[in-house]
Image (cartoon, rainbow, N blue to C red):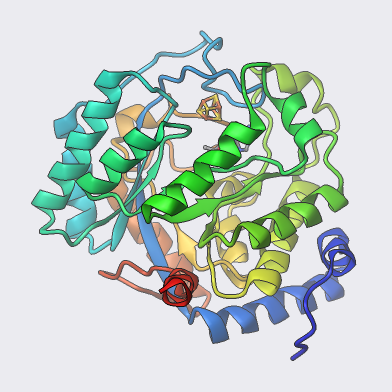
Length: 354
Ligand code: 5AD
Ligand code: SF4
Ligand code: FES
């Protein structure tokens, strides 16, 4: 195994790789690194997408504020707790609470209370990851004190010009980046990620995204292919959308990130499965080690579509559990039931800070 640091041109080569034999070699070497660095267990994070109300207006996202073509919902506390209870019964080690972005005091209080109650009803067993966008330091701190210990906030792209083209004027790259550093300072395990195959994005941009992850020293990566949503301004630009290319780029990015970052947790995200029924398994084979089964009540799933062709809209949590366990054991991997499955990187980072 090579010990020379991975350079930008190595990453570009991996991300651009199209030849099927070369890709197989790339995924196999990423898989070996995964086995050595994080092991063969796949960890489940049951995801509860508890509200599609969003104050932001990202040009690519189906639940952006100005899209009025669907109904907005917010699950009640009791409904969220029911889902969390189910995750606990299923021995999922952790859950993710995700929603559109809101910063109003009612929302902040709501989340604080929900986090607190989930820790109580699960005897502190369930790890809680939040994915609720940009917030103040004070809010992040309150949610951490209530019991959340991981936070996901994607930078979306590390190319600031591209970032500006994906978002309205009032969205700010530097503010988002500052959030990542604040979260880490508070003590969260921090995850970030990007969308892959955006209109106007080059393989060099994607290589820079991986270098950005490495420089930021993050613990978790959640990234997935960009998928068109027709009720968004970006659909107009994405006229040459090619699902096979998006899948290939998504898998190449997972492999290249595993090879460059080694001991972080990397999710095989649902967007991969929107492109190919076996997308998430392919992600695991290319170096990912985390899966996020949907545990949101079925009645809300169709109203939470950030992109089109999202899988599991008609299934319930039990069906997704059975389906995923079948898929994962089918490729010879094991599920780490009942474990938090923190990234080894987080613990190493903390030891070296002590
Ligand atoms: N395609 C793929 N991913 C998307 N996201 C939002 N819209 C899309 C889309 N059209 C991702 C963003 C966001 C995460 C919650 O969902 O990266 O951070
Ligand atoms: Fe809101 Fe997130 Fe969608 Fe942007 S990507 S519109 S912040 S839900
Ligand atoms: Fe939901 Fe397969 S994971 S149906």
